[in-house]
Length: 326
Ligand code: UT7
Image (cartoon, rainbow, N blue to C red; front, side, top):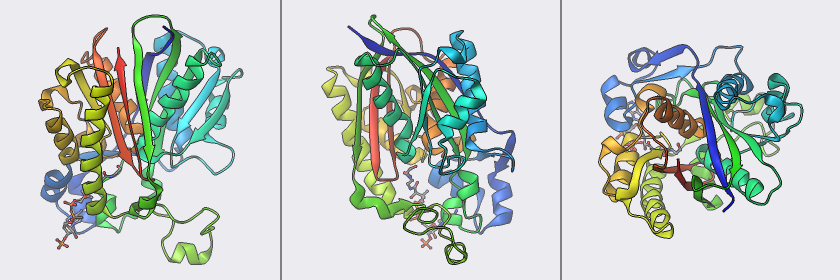
């Protein structure tokens, strides 16, 4: 049976570490509040001259090296991001040029924190239909440049980073078993970045009204996230006719340790079988799952034929899951 297989992973985190204790000096917050409410201890911040494509480039280079292929072998590049270099051209096209991936088509997708799994869904459809055999999928964000550093409700949450995977067609038993994506635009106001688009184009007024920053109704988002993700992971294992005990590792979007624990608990999974790195990275939106996946692979937490379950929830609202046999 034709399947889509992840043949390699790569990730990149900017050097600059921003700790909770530094944030204590910037806004009215505390290390204790951030740790207890989110699980985050520190996050990475891109330098002034780093854009999303720069982070994506580093992660992609690593994934290409590990797959032992040339950028010229890539047929399609998908970049999942909400913080692209600029509205046009896509960060995918900018990345294509940086990599020298001259034979690839390239585009970006916006599904916020679910972007990486949305990208998997697109890549899987292209590969299974025979259109492409080899795809580079990247989740990359520079959220720090769209963060209101005076707003304690949001500035303690986000971080920058990128993760990349190479996907190939395979006839074997390993690869993507299911990938499901969902949206509900009626909740659009829970998490948004209202400025800079055609509704609120950039203007002195949009700047004055702080429309170019990410805004989130955190508590309301939290409640919908927990409920939605609990249903999502159960339906994913049921549709694949497996038990949660069959899953070697749950790799969730890294937004909040309490959301992750609630999802794991609904599956009856001990936290030792859950990939958590938000303590070091914060919430990196579309980049969080591929960064966590790369860490899981390079630290030996996943072996051949293991089932891994990916899940995400984010702005849109969007949510998504994927079951993969490694
Ligand atoms: O990634 C995509 C989707 N995003 C998510 O899934 C994130 C979902 N939301 C969350 O993770 C949590 O809702 C937050 C971490 C954002 C907030 O935690 P919470 O337990 O929902 O807190 P809250 O928003 O209900 O705020 C509780 C209190 C408030 O004070 P009062 O009104 O009770 O006096 C806030 O003003 O905590 C206050 N607060 C803070 N205090 C210290 C909010 N932010 C901070 C802060 N430091 N950084």
